[in-house]
Image 1 (cartoon, one colour):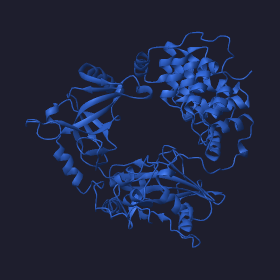
Image 2 (tube, one colour):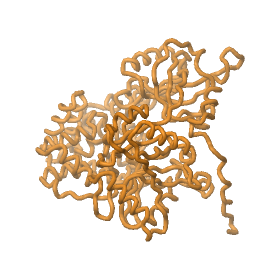
Image 3 (cartoon, one colour):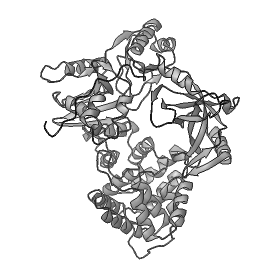
Image 4 (cartoon, one colour):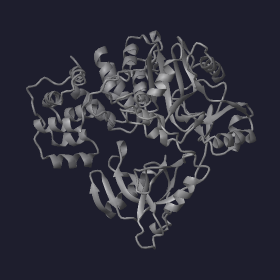
Length: 573
């Protein structure tokens, strides 16, 4: 009998009901083991919170409005009350289960996982919203149980929230089919899709997997160190490579023939935002997988990151936009080339292969590659750091020449030393419900500084950013109670609060921004601590933000005005 959505919901409710990873793993392993190949593929896919496999670039094209209309056509309810319920629960699926009848259509056949897959295939193929709504209505009309309706919604919106992250799913597959975790992880690295890995594991065919391009691989990460002296200790007397840490978008380039895909750290495609980068890389010979950074770039120099931000999310990039915000890809690693997987080779071997690609005389373009400097002592590391800062880069990354490429891992193989700006004391002006395990607490805070001395007439707080990391669960719970008590207005998930709480905020850089009234935004802000010792009147002023913005450590400030763009074409061109 095909696996049903109701069984899937029961299993994942059990998974969500425990905080212990081993229990989550055991519950899923038992479930996966009981399914045939067609169903176990879908069960793993949906347990990972995906509509389609991770290498399938199709999207459902279904938003809140379509689901809202379909739901209310099956279970009429007050739209405003339903909206408030969604806000209260932090997600649509759980809110929906609270209003769903216990037996809405008992005569219907239970929804199976294969029914969902077929419906998703059809949903993504039609752009007719009326047709999409009708298909959604038909799916919801077959949900006999409230948990079915909840999980149908969770899968559609890709927000399962069971706590079964990729590592738990990998371990569950290993346990279900008596494989080692390393075998499962290796197979996923090669083929990309965990739902294909589970089928190979069930068939005892993991060894048949070969590497394929065009699925994003998790990036190898560097471990932060605070000083050159601490970095020297980690090197243990050995010589490492130091290279500039570029201020851009970490990117992974896959190329075969004329096909190119660029993936970011979030595993999303970003080709549309960088047609000039795609065009340049398409001229390189052969097939390859590169790791590197997309940076704003002109005349051999990296420009402030704001140039790239202006391009993100735009589908129509004009000649003017591209000219004012030029971009380039700078490679620092190569993981695959012309049929040979290089990830298991030491970094020094991979750098030779990267140099070979960059120097290929058959290419009609030139691949930009980071420069490496051997370092083994604190003075050498400090000198490399100062050189990177003088070039307006974030800092340096120090890499072990013998390191293999370890996707998703941090360790002592790669270290990063970054520039730091002073912290700022800011006043919280708004608090918002978080996501995931923080969906029921106010964990996201908008903060501000004074536009002038608060004792002067007309002084007001102007926002400079938003942060959600740095506090403990206990501190977030404490602030949630306080903010709910001092809230003066509410817009859905967001509460405007009375200026009372001061937070110490750290950031990597400051840049100009039209998003905030202050005219500035803090890049990568994080909360250092709650300033219980400071009243809001003693928070920082906008003049200090301006001062640090103009300082030399803040490489996000503009260096020179961009060159004038070429004129837009006219009808006569």
